[in-house]
Amino acid sequence: MTKFSFSFIEREIRKKTFGILNTLNLDGTPHTTGILYAVSKPDAEFALYLLTSKKYKKIRNIKNNPKISFIIPFPHHHLRFVPSGTITLNGIAKLVPLNSRDIIEIFFEKRILKLIIADINFKKNEELVFIKIEPDPKISCFGVGFSIWKLRGSHTEGRYFVTIPPEK
Image (cartoon, rainbow, N blue to C red):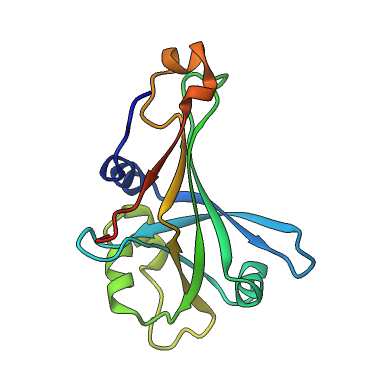
């Protein structure tokens, strides 16, 4: 089986801006929502950041139970019958104040994220908050980096894990 490194997976995560956040409702049932994300600067501790309103269910769920799962899909746009690749990060979500300068800067690095935050008054807005995802060291991956021909032979070979190095 091919061995992929964390640096390869980190590059793939940085290419994207959309993922699926999974939190737990009070009754233990899952709550899933699609959301845009930004990634910490390369020289900083590896983390993902989301921007959302304090009024949403995901915020209530995180306050009650900070354990989350975040899935980044890698669809095959031209071959829709081929299963999407995925990167799944499990970890802890923390709420971070909106006026966090370092996070604002990383949102300005991607065009779509920049458009979303361009008109926000970061000093006066009390409705929005950043969510910081601190992932567990073990990241689960499926199909990312594999050719569809390799997966065609045995799709179970497409699953692998990478570990975030301690210095990240």
